[in-house]
Image (tube, rainbow, N blue to C red; front, side):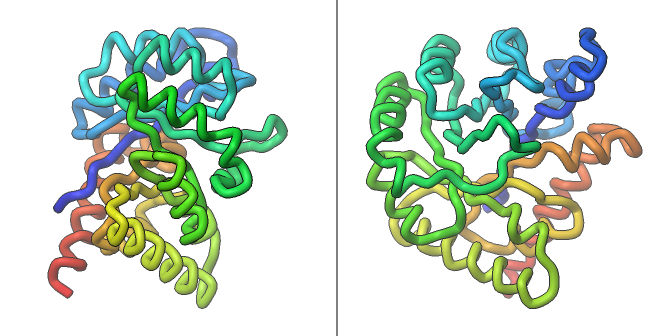
Length: 246
């Protein structure tokens, strides 16, 4: 089974906001990504609106044909925005004002009481719910207990490590994804994936979807967005083929 590729267009908005104008347009990037073969579009509407704006979400809902995955913190404001726009799916992520990017997974164990109502209300509105968590069995169990439809495993630690540590992190991802398969929980991956590290993760058979943004937006400056996406898709397919042949 091939892996779906979700394209995160946050950092097109980051460049736009650096000058305070309207260019480059992240919605245009989403439409181009869709034409290049993206299976979905991911956008993180942060509380401080540092990149994606409310207007971007409104236009994405109106203009793209593939599913929109709204990344959001578990706050009342974000819940109401999600319930208003009704994206196909939402991914609840941890969020700190001072961080440059998401630094790790959500604590589904410690945050169970807080998260429970958000998951329930989103699912009641027919919005599929994912939790962005570390590849940890205890966190996966907590996500399932909360009623999440799926989880997205944080691949940033794997992406940032090297040598034996990288091998250990890959094994951690493999075991976590396998456990998701055993309990029937759909599993995605995201954060830090690039051309050099995606093949090994794609070879893990339980992964259904990758969400990739920052690397592809940067690579598109050199080879164009369509070419960047198609190369990533090729490498993902190569990894999945390695799994089938093994």
